[in-house]
Length: 116
Image (tube, rainbow, N blue to C red):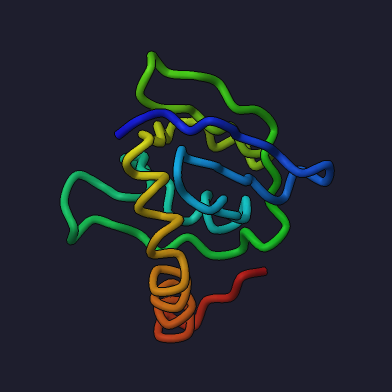
């Protein structure tokens, strides 16, 4: 996967716009990125260990740092900063955003949790 040609954080720090070459930009909210973080804290070490992260409606992006030539590390204002988002994972999130978001909302409802 090639690197995006642009990463832009909105002024309110609640949205990341990612533009890959020859693709339409993807707009991914900070909340969405936080709850699908590829970190072990969220994903666990197997699918059975993955957790549903509630209460992140108002989370914001504090910083974005490059990780080599293949990824970024996003630090959120809730102090979560261990997820390394590869270019391919970000492209997958942009492509499958609606499906993943709806699955997240269904998980929250099923577990009696809220976005906060």
